[in-house]
Amino acid sequence: MDARPEEALQKRMDHFKSALLRAGVKLTRQRLEVFREVAGGYDHPDAETIYRSVRERVPSVSLDTVYRTLWLLLDLGLIATLGHPRERVRFDGNAEPHHHFVCTRCGRADDFHSEELSRLVIPDAARGLGRVEKTQVEVRGICARCLREEGGAAAGTGRPGRPTGRERSR
Amino acid sequence: MDARPEEALQKRMDHFKSALLRAGVKLTRQRLEVFREVAGGYDHPDAETIYRSVRERVPSVSLDTVYRTLWLLLDLGLIATLGHPRERVRFDGNAEPHHHFVCTRCGRADDFHSEELSRLVIPDAARGLGRVEKTQVEVRGICARCLREEGGAAAGTGRPGRPTGRERSR
DNA sequence: GTCCTAAGTAGGAATCATTCCTATTTTCCC
DNA sequence: GGGAAAATAGGAATGATTCCTACTTAGGAC
Image 1: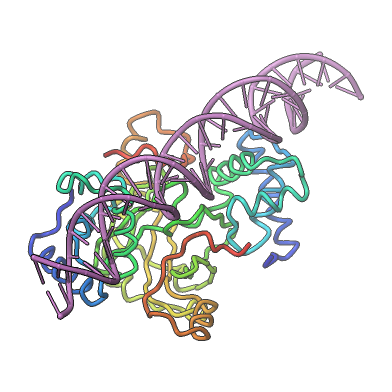
Image 2: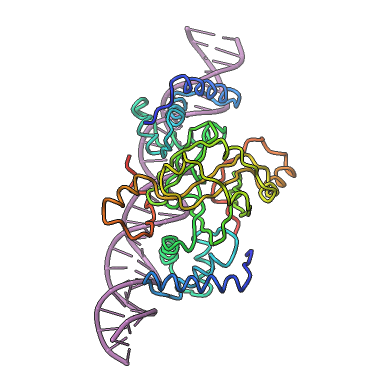
């Protein structure tokens, strides 16, 4: 499965446990196994794959629990997603080279331009993986609009919420 | 709608028409309007939003046509998607800073590391859009595995197919 | 160690974006 | 203008993800 060295994983499991504790979230067998599955390798499994693996150790686990746990781990910053979670596809008609600032709170994506970034040297490590066609930088963070709302109202928890994809404005 | 200057759009419409012609694909009112909608602005609309806008000019258009057209335009390289089209969410448990090589054919995403890329200077243009939390480089292209298959069998059309998300191996 | 209660879970039903199916229209080459 | 191939509309189907509700468990208080 592209396994991560034992000791590195052990360290991450410890970090995982203390993060749950700090967040006041219960440590359950299910959460442990889901995290181990994602953190234990270098691949990028989908929820179904994780579900199947976890079920080998906890046969009664449900797919819903796997999803709930994954979003929890994401909120806690313990794992990340590839691409934008829980979003319908969006299209980009900008033909000029550009990059994206993606808001992890509301999902908004703004274009920005940068001479330097567009001239990036692609390292051999990437070049060896296939035929490169395009390179884009994705900057993630909280967009100005969300910062403003957060500042105005109660200043939030400091931990970003997961965009639901349903709060799309127009 | 974040409108693009008229003359720039006109140039893109011409390019659109000749691209369809070159690909031996028929020019229909629906395709014209869908393309205009995506290429005409700087935002990143989803299919539903495009559907609603196009329906104002072509009331009988169907959502399916909008989707079919968008994937066609994507295949022709006339537009792009934000994130990875037609994929279930995938999770990334890699805690170290890393970047991704994403195969536009099969959807596979491989990690790679790069000291230089991890030290990227984020331009002011991006910094001004919000509070930056993380920066990742996404290299897109055809992965080694797909290149091999393509080379073995008939060498393909040269135009990348859209991953369906259903051909996931395991 | 036992008890209590909030938090977590299972499982099935519900949602919703996207795709498929099929009969009907259009485009474009002659 | 006429016909074959390609596109479209519309509704039904699919499949990932989420919601609902009754049942279980973790973990702090005793």
